[in-house]
Image 1 (cartoon, rainbow over the protein chains, first blue to last red):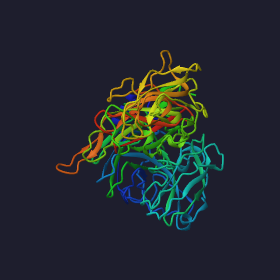
Image 2 (image 1 turned 60 degrees about the vertical axis):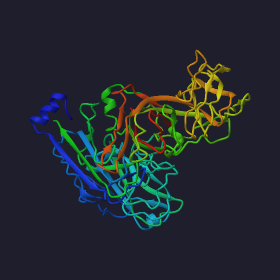
Image 3 (image 1 turned 45 degrees about the vertical axis):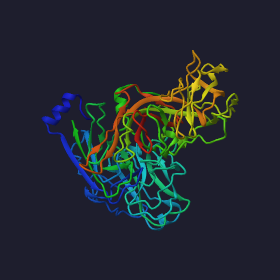
Image 4 (image 1 turned 135 degrees about the horizontal axis):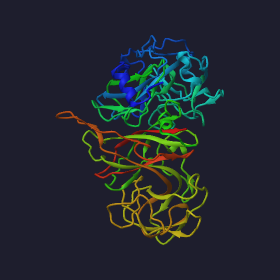
Length: 301
Length: 297
């Protein structure tokens, strides 16, 4: 449980110290492209850059102990539930404003490299379906609320193939497919969310699920169509968006959202949450951007 | 099904019943006029431009790909919309303080010739309202530059299904290109109105039968049927100066339904677009960017 009242919240914070601050800062690994989201996972900073060391075409679960870089959010609060109380963000970049910064919980990824990117067709993903247990990978029971995006983690070669993900939805129906016609971005920079962009058949930040679907339990395959990327490496990411995106109007400005005193929502931080951030750039950045975010979370009990 | 409590509403993101989508629309380089409305769907970006390009005078549905992406789910509501306006340049200051309207774009009749004086331009009813069958509003959108102020009336079927209703006399605008709203109840060059005024007693339109011009407008326009959903605004342009003391300007405007206003239903299949109203100079080459969030119970 969280808190029973505002008084309880104040008491838990001030008397029992049940609050932690978190700071995150990344310098984007490459320039951002206009109208695209970036994932920052392989960008340097605090937390370190991920290298995606998992096996090819195999789902690698990530949590708050992910060795490649995770914000150290403790699970010490159980059975009390953790909730975000406030969150702020800013960007420093020579160009590209305005931005949105969206916190997500990265549940895991499957990487595709070499011919799994440079050829079209169906690329089968090996994954144990998300279930409904106490394990961290199952922190969103049966994948309810989880979303998909495909991000580059190297500079992508020429061509923009179509891309779809086949998945099992949170109700257990297999063979569901994301929206047809969604295209990747030719020659995208590293760190780009390839399904996003500033044109037709681009969707950001997430691949649209099939009609009526509200979650993803299992990633079955990636289907590349049209003309394949000449080269590149991508990760198919499964994540839970955590709360409203933070708007950043111009370089150097900082915006903060209060989740307690506006419309109280206090987004849940599940045990094992691997919090990271996606960034939307209205314009193109001309140099690597520094993205800063911080949040406070607390717990009751 | 709607929501029974505020707690249920607030908890929707945690339960996964929540959708986030980005939009980014760049106004074309042709100058727009202060106090004139513009149709952001007409401009490039994501979602892609909606040029109302189909057979002249034939009713057509606005394609879903032209709208801000939302999931195909019943009982969906607007949860939050956040917008920022990127200045057209480091010194641009004219896209501040826009009034904005989120609307569901339903049906349109393209390529009405505003020069066809005295000729009744009959519409072909090849499609009907896909949502809001009890009637919506008519928006006149320029599909070309227009050189003079024209005058016209629209014959339509009203919200009760009564045909042969006639709009108030409406004047077009002088515009530099497509994407501007071109209706006004006066022939003044400055100022405009968002929707065509209907015959007294009517609140909505189910279909349009014809348009008749009594004075030429020198251009082409589309008559779009839209359902207005939610009013919001952008307070100032976002920009960074590039000379002298470098300074950052800008603001984001966030609107949370329930907290700031009543929840707004987004019908399954809605094609969402935005109508803007600048108040200080041209909006040309500025970019409206934002995040639209929906939720369901």
